[in-house]
Length: 309
Ligand SMILES: O=C(O)CCC(=O)C(=O)O
Ligand SMILES: [Fe+2]
Image (cartoon, rainbow, N blue to C red; front, side, top):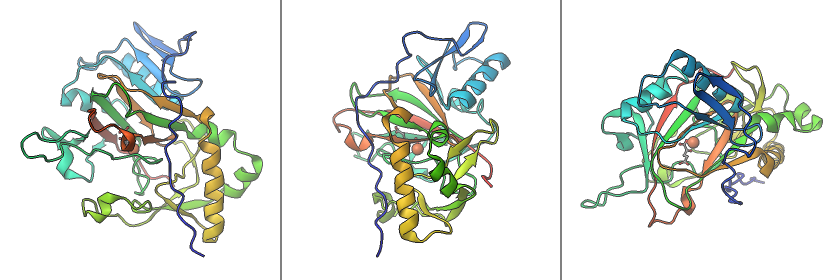
């Protein structure tokens, strides 16, 4: 029997948890810069940094530590040129990489890809990738050296819709049952970009790279914490298991991860910079549900990561 791939349905529950919690414990501070939680233990808001200006070493350190400790960071109220976005991205790692879809690269630099549902008013041509991630995934897990971090800068956002949802894969691993932990310990999985059949492949906009492998439980290269590193969109198979058994095990793990308590629904404001740690979280866009009369344009960078095994 051919088991059907697990289709990743973004959960659109009550949005907007991504407000700083009421009592705002300061979790990092340097000078006038501080970080406060966005949600319990997951996600942090960094205040007092203007990314259009050179950022001090102390602030870079605060941003980086907060990124490692909280997995998703947000800096609000930014007004950035493309170079500022590249500089900000390099706080999280020295090397940035261009997206596969060249047609949506920013005109100033291939290191920024434009995510947008706008079209050119004269030619009708799409101005960006309009629905690039509305399925649960870790960025670039379909390559042997997946993305370390991803940064998005919100140029314009709709008053409603277009949230991004993040899942805390570190806590989800910590709280996985001992039985499931035992079943995945030491295992690897095959990832492939084309696993979830999407329009971009049939339309020839993207080529599918060959299969690659990653550990199912990834130990973070810097924090040493373990996190689940399989996702419903790119993880084809847990190696060493029959297909049906692999599918059933994946399904169980994804049901566990996608419980509301591990999710953060992020509601965008123009000027937001959000970055996340792909070794410790997965995410989905909800742009597939966005009202086409509302516009959303974000600039995106990818910070390169190393091998996972
Ligand atoms: O547009 C979004 O909300 C996120 C898209 C995405 O998956 C990404 O930028 O990696
Ligand atoms: Fe993504």
